[in-house]
Image (tube, rainbow, N blue to C red):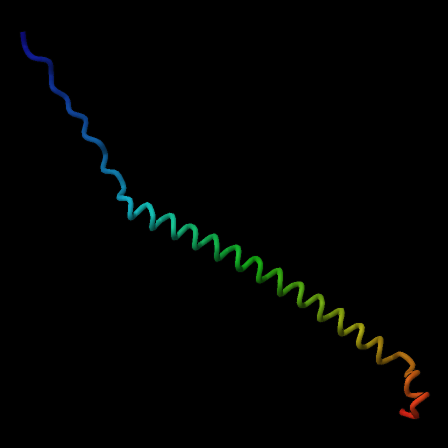
Length: 75
């Protein structure tokens, strides 16, 4: 009888741990940058809204009657 055919399964080369960690770190850095930019955009939008509100309040105060000026004799 002939011997059974010898088969050897060669495993695919596995990614080196360093490569996996570099990819994971790059992914983490990318999403950290995305979160930072989203937070910064939200901050800028809030700042613009508050600045506009303060401009409107300042304009309203400029149109108010200067009661303190009456008592102090200021114009």
